Amino acid sequence: MRKFFTFAVLFTVAVAAFAQGAPAASTGSFNSLFDTTRLVYIAVAGAAAACGTAQAKVLSSAYEAMARNPQAADKISGSLVLGLAFIEALVLFTFALAFIVK
Image (tube, rainbow, N blue to C red):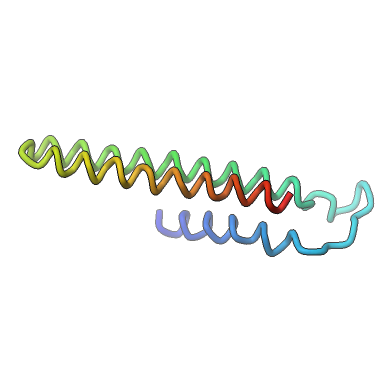
């Protein structure tokens, strides 16, 4: 799972690297498959998929922890909301980067 998130982050960062000053590709060539617009869409989709997976894992772990220790539910739920906000922020940053690159 850690390799997946590493790959997703590197793939998201690669959009900015490939978006710099590439010559225009002719229609129908192999390079037209990897134009900036498609890479941006793929990066946003990948970030959204990784966000959904991460949020599901966080929620699962938090609810399991609350079930095991109900007295700590207040502290766990506070950390849960903060963690979900950070995870969602990653997708929003990728979405903002998509507009900057595009």
